[in-house]
Amino acid sequence: MTDPRTATDEHFRSEDWYGDDLGAARFVGCTFTDVDLSEATTSGAVFERCTFHGGRFNASVHTATAFVGCDFRRTSFFDATLDGCKLVGSSFAECVMRPLTVTGGSWLGVTIRGTNLSRLDLTGVDLREADLSMSDLTLATLARARLDRTALRASNLDRTDLRGASLDGVDLSVALLKRTRLDLAGAVLLAELHGADVDTSA
Image 1 (cartoon, rainbow, N blue to C red):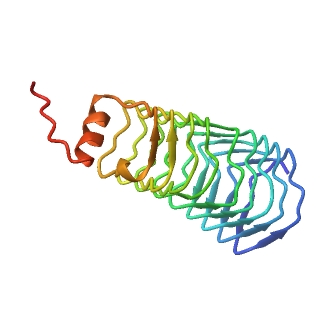
Image 2: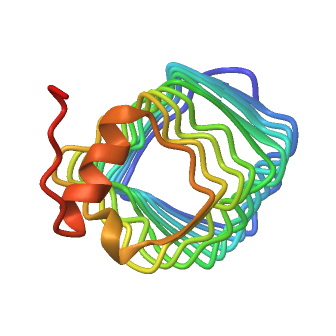
């Protein structure tokens, strides 16, 4: 399939789109059940309010593509690439999210609970108001990420790199911290969350 596709409110079942170039396709309100998108590519495509149940995005490459308000369940993104993609308001449940190559993009308000996100490099990604509760972020890199008002309840931040990340409204005290890498601002925030009165003028 080499030409962009446009579909609204359609249900695609068990289709084989392996290696297809979907270009700037646009899908609105569509359901994808067990669709194989392995090694598929998109560029400037839009998936709006779509549902993905099962299916595979393995080794697929997406550039400046938007997945807005989408629902992903039991979907595999093994070795996929998301370059400058917009995932605003999307949710992921029981999905394989690693290994995954991410370059920039907006993940504003995404929900990714209880998921293995270890070792992912999410440098500079906009994750404001995301819910990453109970997810494993061991050795993940969130340097310079926008994490304002992100939920990290019971998230594992073992050796997670948070240097330069914006953390306004983030409660780090409810996360599992172990050798978490913080810059001065993050360390001050953590100290204040634990009741310290930090004097940065000293």
